[in-house]
Length: 379
Ligand SMILES: C[S@@+](CC[C@H](N)C(=O)[O-])C[C@H]1O[C@@H](n2cnc3c(N)ncnc32)[C@H](O)[C@@H]1O
Image 1: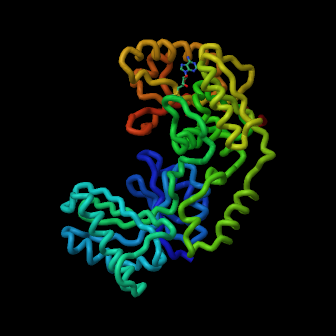
Image 2: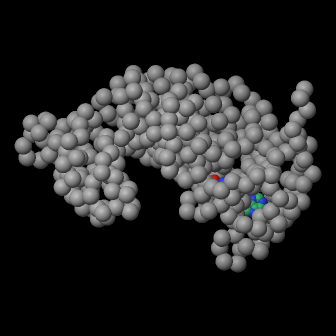
Image 3: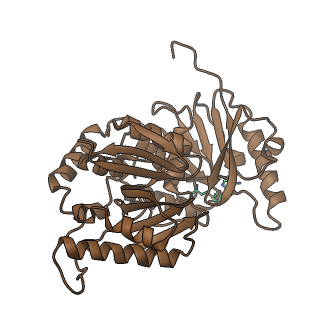
């Protein structure tokens, strides 16, 4: 069953969420820096690709060993069973990275790994001369960290954040993986109202709707490993059928997105439509200071502008203050705001119940969490 060593990579700070997702799929896992490692069969490769909302990609570990010389890297790479993964016509580019290692020249490491695999494949497939490399694609990575080389094959292709619904985007769209994480870090359940008052291209409301109806995030896209001969088509078919069975399209949702910019509202609508959620999410043009509601026990998740650009900060902070005023009466709502502004709480006018450090790309941000009153037990 557990033939493969698998790695789901994540952005820093999302490891615990991704690990929970891997466990929920039924695989025991371990968490390292930015990596969730687990064991599984072909179905595990397929299901983790289809279902993981917060992971960047799924990789197959071919080998891991110490290498402090190019000879060592070559010989140990050559001794790995590459032919178990790749047919003789496989196309296999090698990418690389090196951190705190003697072998610091990444281009040399890539070239050596490539050469070692070519030799291995030639011997195993009894080929002389060039390998044609006109077959399915296997993207190999050699990652050196403190003199340990990790050799993996990418089973995802485009990053898992590419769900296949984002046709248009604004200036600072959130990665879909982070947007899903923001939703998963709240106390939202699909029966509660959900609002993103800074929806931009709609990523957060769309991810919320996918979560709310338990729709697999990868349902609408392709994966590089679909072209590999050793993952039978039936495994993909079964996993997609499973995803179809588990999707709860009848779950009613009350999800809304708003943005000050009407062009963004249009883009958000188009993206929701692409995701097959067109009717489900309510988008409208509105400034956050005009937000009012008579609903209770809802959840607000927002990724407002951070005021990172010169001259923007004061205006953004005034807007945070207006937001604080508009949202103050909503004592049953829980409010979650992601921003890099360290003075957010002062401007918003209230200390957060809890803060969580997260990275939005390379920007260090905090996820400010304001927990609303709990509903009475009989609600
Ligand atoms: C960082 S972007 C949000 C990106 C979005 N999460 C996405 O994935 O596309 C911030 C958004 O807030 C909007 N915005 C700025 N000021 C606003 C205000 N006062 N009220 C509502 N929206 C505002 C901007 O138009 C922009 O689309």
